[in-house]
Length: 219
Image (tube, rainbow, N blue to C red):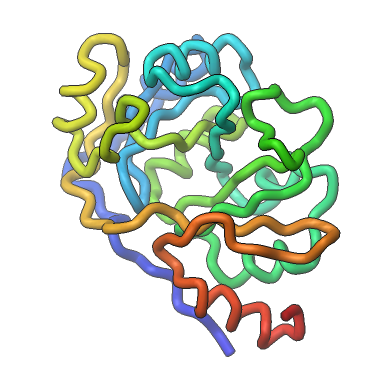
């Protein structure tokens, strides 16, 4: 049984050329924050392995320091390199739904920055189906943060204008992706030695996640 990946919101209504890509990647390398489109909402990207960049991101958002931030990686190999171990359920889900709106929470490597690690020792990561999001992670050669482009407690931004209204000149680079039509964030599934569990309902329904694992005998 196969599961079709949702292509909604892959489009970018404005050109994303080499110049804009390189400018955004240079900003990320310098510890700046970039607003970019994903397959769900606009995200705020920072170098996920730079504590200074993470501090800048949290200061911009007003986000609670103890609340971990999820990541976007360029591909499954890069995503799994963040984990201490990759349970079989996680590999099956990645095969079924990546690239796409599924965040996997995996047992985190010990050397990751503390703001990335949740209370259960997990790190959340996905491979986005939006080409701009993947291009940034690939160009940086490191994962980028995927927190939504809004102030803490606010509504996620579906347009670049909404993100600009929230952050203005505090963000150096804004990448246009048109109006994003998603109605839900990524689904978040934790996978560890105890099995798998859904931590947040989202774009991929609980039923579809369970069915993907059931087919593989991983109920």
